[in-house]
Image (cartoon, rainbow, N blue to C red; front, side):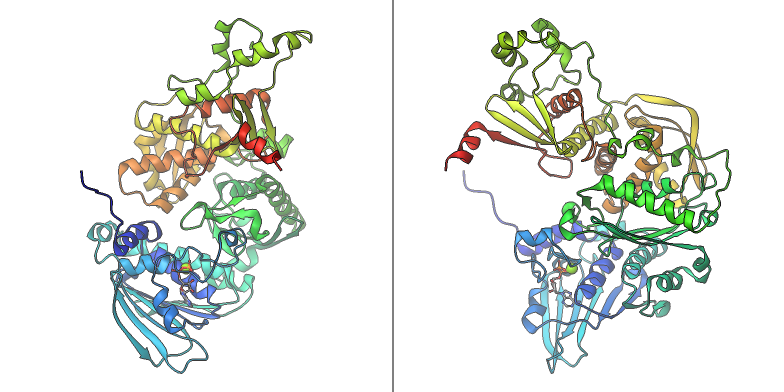
Length: 604
Ligand code: ADP
Ligand code: MG
């Protein structure tokens, strides 16, 4: 047979990559604004026509590009921001993937004009569907202007998928607000169809918030400030008495980057405990600065999600700081007997912040390793039929281990058992195998387990649902309600049951058994965020996003102590998965360290 594998041509590869980077006009806005900021601009203009469907133009006064760079910037993986893989762990720019311009140029008509300060003339380049149409010298000011016209002109399916101008404009305004709030010292202008929407002069944070949300917000802002070894927190929350019926303006920035994080959101909300009227939401604008190497912003292509090394400590600090500020500013509590149960922090957390999301792992309390072999099955309560072969041969069977050590151990007490797993730094689990050890990332492993189980319940068979004693009412914006309503069948399969949908609230009367009541609103909020980010196109990817989102929200986190039994169940569950080796987001869940490799380490 002849060979059939070939490399995809660049323009096709770029179009595929564009699917990840560019979902809608707002994604282009985000990428172009971020590039302007990375270029050191102090003045940035955004011009739109028809919700960005016809034109998105960003004009900046940044450092501009040389003639060669102007050409290079449209190549895939062309970036000036990182040079080697290690740079990824110490990022100080918004971009770094070198994908945005290549992707945008693959699916639109793009016109670039750029000039560096020391150049007499600038460069102008026209490019359509990855093809350079023209390149000329041009008389222009220092900085860069990029005009993106007729987005998705060559992908009709995606163009059709775009929502109404109102909705696409809303998405753009959301992105714009996130960026202007992260950079109050930069001036921004936004024109839509030649009408001025925002004209923001460079200023400080309070003034920027007021310029974006109106002067009424000024009196509502309570400043937040805290400095510790691992984080500096600044910003504002709104006084509880001004909290809104609809989820208001809620912004987290980490190192000047807007992020979404249900866990930190929960920390803020819980600081308002006892101060909020039922179903109301505070606004917040919170700026966290952490060492660049203590976060991982690589986990999502559009980078609104990041992973913290010390999420639990951040949670506790954020909550305490806000509580303190609310107290200092004499914010009198409102007595409210119908307080929303969803605003309660999990019981465990009150006692000890390191126990935030202990997984529900069922163990057999009667387990005794010295009992007959026939009893040993019970030891693996999660051992599903599909327990994979390779794992069976990999893992030292209980039997082997026991026989080896039987005599020796029997001298000790009957109850004592052989420890086969160990937890290190509340992050990894070490499990002994025949040929060495397996190192398991507890959080990623748990995500894989939950992901498969949710995917199964959403797509194949309905999950068990637990009825709530008191139905829980949660407020959402009308667009969010609309979204949840369209996902209702899948949510029901996953174990949710709903009572009433109104324009801005819904009532839940049953939840999946793996979810606790206090997590209901977090899980739905995270789901909405994730769905918004992914913009799934097929119903399958809807399921997938949902299962991923639930898995991520509910998984045990780094920092959670696991008892030996919980460790073992986690290990067994993981290796009962169809695809145990990678997390739902594509990261390794475990690594094997064979005796050979270990020997090698000492072979010096
Ligand atoms: P990334 O931002 O990840 O590096 P992009 O595709 O967004 O990738 O941009 C590629 C490169 O083009 C950037 O690294 C930068 O060197 C250059 N560039 C893009 N936009 C601008 C701009 N507005 N001003 C100056 N240089 C720019
Ligand atoms: Mg970029």
